[in-house]
Length: 339
Ligand code: NAD
Ligand code: WQD
Image (cartoon, rainbow, N blue to C red):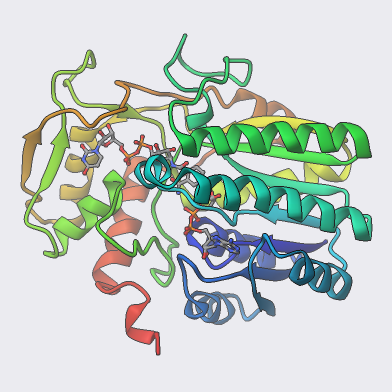
């Protein structure tokens, strides 16, 4: 298929490009490099020996989208482009609604103009909010507690209405906690500022960039008192997009899929795995709970297996070892190659 990948230079997008090229799909990336760099695409080209057409532009701009659609004529779109920091979304709600919701609207309009009927969307487990039951299945009520989560829920509703009206296909992938890096150690997560998420923070402590990890609460109702999450290796996640493209080829309408492993790990378990992988001590300091955090979340991903034939295969050790290989081999991320 010819696949337009918005946000393809980002963390999950870049790993997905590798898997798409490995399956002989043709790709075109649209990215404004707001949270990434064209260097990432050079790494993908080097790694795959593949062709990655890249257009620098904003997913909210109708003219840019029209040009890309008419030139590339995609069979499907994978829509990663968006803003993802929960805390920032609370202080900059309009910016988040603009990029995440208006960006999705603009993309669908442009798809309609060229008759492109398939889209795979980066949604998030955060659309569920405080768990009514665990593991979350896709029928769990949607009750996001942040602006970020609401932008993803709104985009899901828009995509579902579009699919219904147009006869198109919208695959809504609800990612749990993506972590890890490509086995080559040439691609990985490269946060611009202080990492918000656990795994990149641990990695920066391990490599000596930060003195210790704050553990946000050790008095949760969990076996060791620290928060439980369903971490998913980014390469497994990337492969879920390839499976979703195959699914979209012979289904119509909107369908949501949880993308996790079903096996939650605590903050302490993540630190322990990283100590083993890195051989570094990784000091921790117990801090108070982070506002808005829930104790535990866990995916029921059985629908992804039964309907798309996808399941996660990477282990916790793979997640820690690949993150360490990436972080230690690229202590400044992609920065050293940027002009
Ligand atoms: P990322 O920031 O690394 O990638 C997003 C990409 O989109 C970046 O390359 C950025 O430059 C680009 N972008 C941002 N705004 C744009 C715009 N207006 N026009 C064009 N490009 C734009 O993030 P990621 O972790 O790879 O996440 C990808 C998607 O998955 C996002 O939509 C995110 O909300 C979603 N998601 C991420 C996680 C996670 O924990 N990483 C979890 C669930 C869902
Ligand atoms: C994991 C656990 C923290 C940092 C977020 C978004 C979600 C999705 C994934 C985009 C929690 C603890 C963390 C630290 C810590 N993103 N922690 N010290 O909050 O589950 O999910 O990222 O869609 O929408 O909300 O992930 O990695 O921030 O936290 O103790 O320095 O690690 O309290 O228990 P979270 P996280």
